[in-house]
Image 1: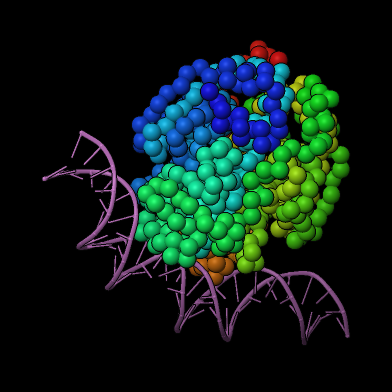
Image 2 (image 1 turned 135 degrees about the horizontal axis):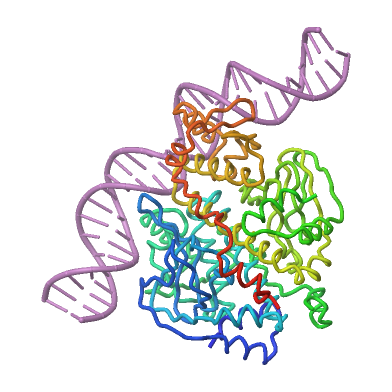
Length: 252
Length: 252
DNA sequence: CGGGTCATTGATACGTATCAATGTGCGTGG
DNA sequence: CCACGCACATTGATACGTATCAATGACCCG
């Protein structure tokens, strides 16, 4: 069931019950992967469209010197590009961080039938836009912010993304990633990632207990992070889009 | 005229004359901007779809401390996201680096009519995919490569992108960017960008003459850059896509 | 209880930022 | 036509952020 994906899409625009049923009906199979299992390998032929339904994964690249750069995290409701269909080769891999459940969509049907579901079309379109925005913000973070701000910023972003799919409780969430992964995502070393986390904890901007992260004062953390959630484009669709959809004019 | 855009798209799949005429017919106006003029400002309401037809621009973000991160360069044939239509606010700005000509597309017609041009649809789809891939490679570069490799890598990428639209001669192209901009794009300082360029020149991997860059030995530069062009996805559409299109099955 | 993964901390090395100064080419106005 | 100013490139000296190396500690699972 694509509950998380649907929840996320509905932050942009409402979906009808038939739309949701259609989406859920696209799931051709659901697999559970153990931690560190590759869902998609760089260089291989793309194999369809996948949706993370539980657990967490990340997109990554391995560089010639063996270093790894994590490009983005994938939480429940995140999916691979619709577009795997168009390319001959994956330019990055996707690996599970912990035990992860992945739904596979029937991409033939998706392509063939999506046109009759304009609300879903637009919502998935927004989804791909948001992905790009997240990536751009990451470039800005890694390129121009210091390690401390980068860590704080990513923690804010993860909070927002998990909140959208109901994976937060109060100001608390399961921190799904190790410090190595945090470093690999932010272009810093594991050791430095640890120091920055400790500093954030010392300054009472975060509190960690086992794998649970608590944000006692979200405003304070956001200030330290220079975090401005607008880049996530969470305000919902512009009226013009909704009007066009309800008039069935946006897509014939 | 969208000559460069069309040239670029045809590296993915062939377009028919009617398709090209339709694309060119979408241009509602063409404006010339001077250097440093903003085409799109961060935070403003998106204003349609733009295509760079001559000159060069860049996407960028300004951080709270005044620092700038350049997210990507835009050369002739590069366009803004199709999707500006869906969002309420731009998450980044676009500014001209030199004198630049920008075509504005009639986005209403684009949305309404694109469906009757499946080859164009798929080509633009590929285009947005490639944009994502470029951004991901930038994350990997900034996050995990040293400054020397980053500079070399970007120079290789720019060469490929300009080559696609016929803006290179032999192994030479107009280097359209200053060293400040190079630094802002790669997350390094202007001074260090200069040193890396000088080192590349000293090692005979590049030669600069005014604003013209020559790559005497492309293999050597690529080796120094860890550059592997596969992430640009230049091989053209998979046969399955072409077959589906010619059978008119990919899009009804 | 042992071994593995992950977190933590200190000491040191290195890459890159920053500051400062000079050089170079080019367009503009006198 | 030349002098000025301005943007950009270049180079050296120094400071700082972060990587790396190394060792220990904490926790979990079989």
